[in-house]
Image (tube, rainbow, N blue to C red; front, side, top):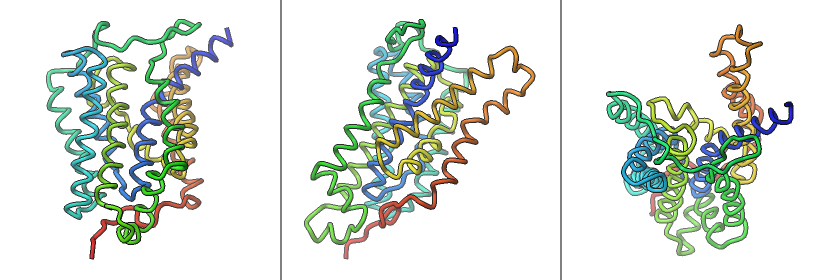
Length: 295
């Protein structure tokens, strides 16, 4: 029985880590190029919403694709504001969060949206009878691809150059604004996949609270990782583990006396402790968050 509990918590942790890992890896790519997007929570929320609508129209894979397009489009708008218009990245990110919160609440005014069995992504069956979404495999593979891309390819070196010293990169013939725009848009595509995964493949419904602060936890995962995609995978699993553990503990009869709100706080408390412990030791690109103005 204890072994079954172990596998259940492991599977729940893997499921919970997916949106954190995908969103964090996408943000790592964007921050490596020098753009800091605090609007990940809004991107997750909007992508989850449009993902459900896409699934209802064309099935789960269409829903995931629509979510990716949504995330990429929102990040594209953010990157245009931050690069072409020289706007504040912080304010643009906050604007994305507020826009998504208002639009999704308006769209769900009649009630939550549910994904029927035929519209939900089929899960891989496990020995304990719990389904495991194929997107979990994607979340396990993407960090390794991103790590190779950033560490072993010329394009990865270009991203680092743009984030560290955009003036020097510009002199070397690199289009700084284009690189930042593409990097952030790609990061948004991964966040869009994460948001659609939540509603279409994991939860199976859409509510205005479905993102549950995961965009901010993904930002914490980026800090924990120090812009290393492999450490983002580790951090995402740690936070996902505590989220699933809190859910499992909350359903134990012996602990019914403990307020559910107190148990639900666990992953967020762990996030704060982890960020507090590493925030002063992480080195980010020198030009992170600073708009580049060509002279």
